[in-house]
Length: 173
Image 1: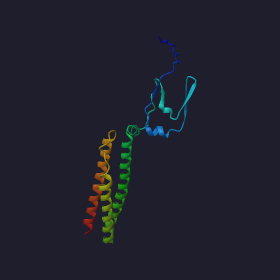
Image 2: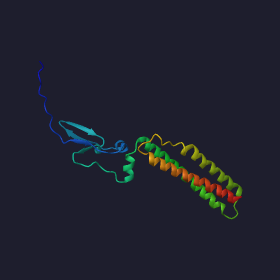
Image 3: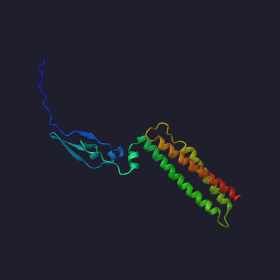
Image 4: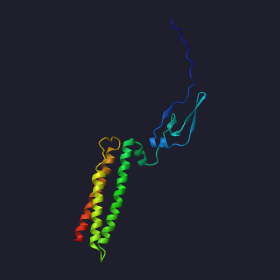
């Protein structure tokens, strides 16, 4: 026959809940909080991780930050890649606009302008076909729609840039 032993009860604490904060915020946290429980002290790097019962978890200040915190790491990486590609395309668009402005200047040298337009055409086409088209959204869940719409917008901008280059080359003939 087994003897039953009385299990000592632990003192009651206010229940703790996990708060909803993004992974990047957790990684970026620098301050420490000391939470007393029984006779032990626990150190937590992120004060947002623990909320007392009845407290609201901290909220991000902007809807963009809230939406971004809901994205998976893979979706965030894809969105960063698309943002980088958008910035690269913006640089090419600015160069094309500058070259097109030179096309309408009096006394312009047609040969170098055609060469510059051809160079930009090749760079934008390469960006579109090797980098933008290489961004896959099939494996994404949390940011799939946002990534698709961003990739589509970049593709449309690149195509518009290519069209304006072709029009400028025709006007030089």
